Length: 72
Ligand SMILES: [Ca+2]
Ligand SMILES: [Ca+2]
Image (cartoon, rainbow, N blue to C red):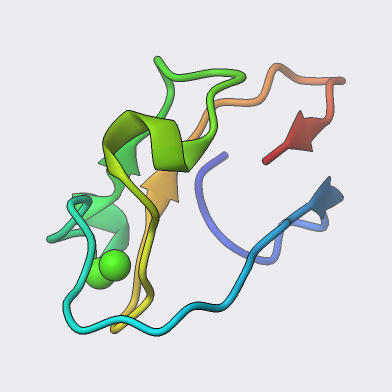
């Protein structure tokens, strides 16, 4: 399932930093344009292509096996 408010439980860690431009995962402003992280399991976002910066809406696609928990 890739859409919001599905009652799934997850942990989300973030840090706030100053920025002057957006990240390298753009354009990912819609569900249809979500950046696909499904092949980057157990990898910090910052090691894929730098930190994510939320200057606008950001969507990321992950896959969680039914019955399992997602950590990111
Ligand atoms: Ca962004
Ligand atoms: Ca975005």
